[in-house]
Structure formats: C-alpha cells, structure tokens
Image (cartoon, helix red, strand yellow):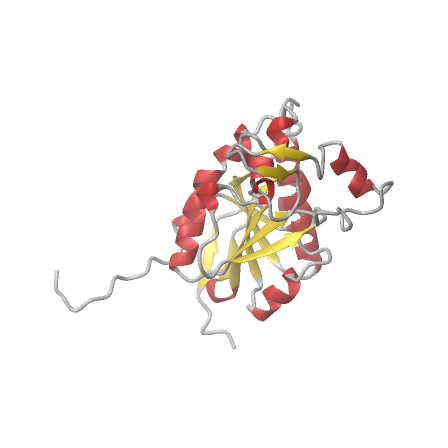
Length: 245
C-alpha cells in the first residue's frame, strides 16, 4: 500500500497539476548514444543533436532531485535484438523507417569498440554518460516508439502504484509523444518537462515538431511544465544528525 499522500501543485499548461509524490515516477525516454552522442545514429545521419544535448543538464538535475526524494526513475531504451527479429517484417513500417538510419549496421564507436546501430548490448544503445542509471533505477527496453508496446512498463508502474509520470527524453514528437499518448490511454497523468525533451526534426520550420507536440500534449494528453517549476516544489530532504547548528 502507498504511504500517506504528499501532494504537490506544479504550475503547468493548460492548468496546474496536483500530483502525489508517493505515486509518481520519472520516465527517461531514449536518452542514449544513438540519439544524443557524437558518433551515434542521429549524428552519423547528419541530424543536429544539439537540442538533445541541451536537454541533458536539466534532466540530470531532475533525476538527482527525484532520487533524493525516492521517486522511482525508469529509463526506456530503443533497441533491437541482434538478429532484428523484433524490428518487424522487412516490409513493415517500423523496419522500413529504421532501415533508413542503418539499423543493425556495424560501426566503430567513439571508444573504438565494435558496435551496431540500435542493437541491444552495444555502445549505440547505452544511456548517455551524463545520465547513467544509478542503483535502484529501472531500465526497460522497447522496440517501438511507445514505451508501453510489448514491454513490462505498465506492469512495473502498477507494481510501484504509480499514477503520475514526470516525462523527459527524446524525441518530443516521436517516442516521447507516443509514450505519453499510450500512458493517457491507461489513465496515467503525465507531466512533460519541456526543457528536458527535444526534437531535432522540423527544427527549421516556422513552428517546430517540438512545439507542435507540446501544443498537442498540453491540449489533449497531459500537462507541460519545466524542470525549474518542478525542482522549486519538490520536497528537500532534511539532513539528519545529533549535532546542533
């Protein structure tokens, strides 16, 4: 059973969200080398990864604060089996979209190790160094855009008695939005932190994919806020000790 509710009111759009800290988990979606590191899949494809890299520092601050108040941290990683058997049939949309980016291709990682694009157990699918999972964190592998599709994410969240999800990660309009949509369908309340997510695709447009997704999410699927608003309201653990000031 959950402990007594600890309610926080987080300023957000379209309106403030009241979340119960005792029933809240943090999701970190696809913050892995293939998307956010030099030498990863995106960078090799000529995609500007600067927006994703800019989201790393605020995300790290959120994770540190979350761990300090014992919020569960759950990482999602986009990865496929070495034989790509979970990527879909060769003519399936999922396989075709990822083939454009060289899924399964053998590459030499920046650390000189032999690696493969979007294949599990390689440098390419490892979490970015600055966001390395800590003891007690949970890592869930996925093979479609949504973190709920054919994974144990829903079971894990129900076991944790989570009802509210603080969402970070990349990319905003693809895996982040897909996961938030599926979460909403399962009655989770999602708070997306706009500065902890990024979308390189469409950045050259008058309104980016990132902005479009924020609008869609806050209108229909959840709430949008920032790391600054969240961190200002998370409870700060009190130091313990027998000494006096």
